[in-house]
Length: 119
Image 1 (cartoon, rainbow, N blue to C red):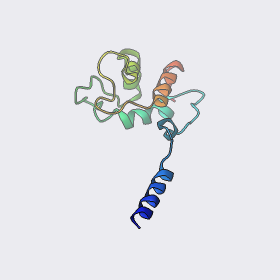
Image 2 (image 1 turned 90 degrees about the vertical axis):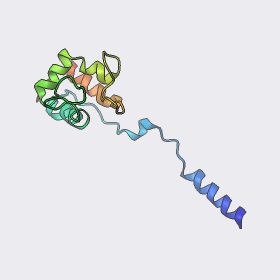
Image 3 (image 1 turned 45 degrees about the vertical axis):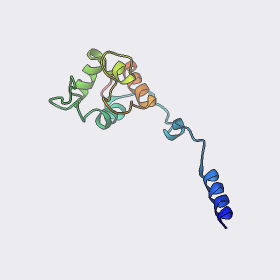
Image 4 (image 1 turned 180 degrees about the horizontal axis):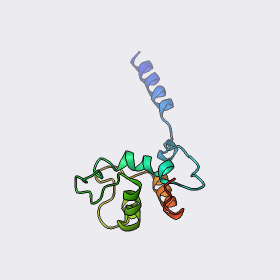
């Protein structure tokens, strides 16, 4: 009986395993034709940056990222994209957390290339 239970357990475990990669867990969403702050970027910043980048900034954050102008300034003057990409001065952002998924970083890069549009 013990062998039977062991065999059933082994078969169950074998069939419950999967080879899904982490990339498969992130929805493959087509990037927008033109990225804008209000439609595409604000949600990323709100969900990942406002733990520290409030007014006034806390936990060593250098600038607030509460408004369109704050975030635009961060991209233009404070290396925001290189910090979230992990290849700029200072620590990788978000500090102490996992890095942003590459598709979100790419969307912020696209927003800059599209002209940092608000709407």
